[in-house]
Image 1: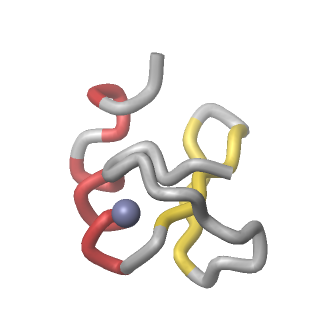
Image 2: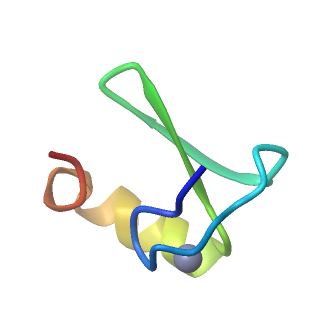
Length: 45
Ligand SMILES: [Zn+2]
């Protein structure tokens, strides 16, 4: 799965996960997760 913030490939066991509109998004780091959580609609098409 791809980190929607930085485009990095992330393992699906990643600890950094958010849900938005019933979809799960995984992140490489807490800072990518926080960026997403602040403004998820910017990163989801
Ligand atoms: Zn990232």
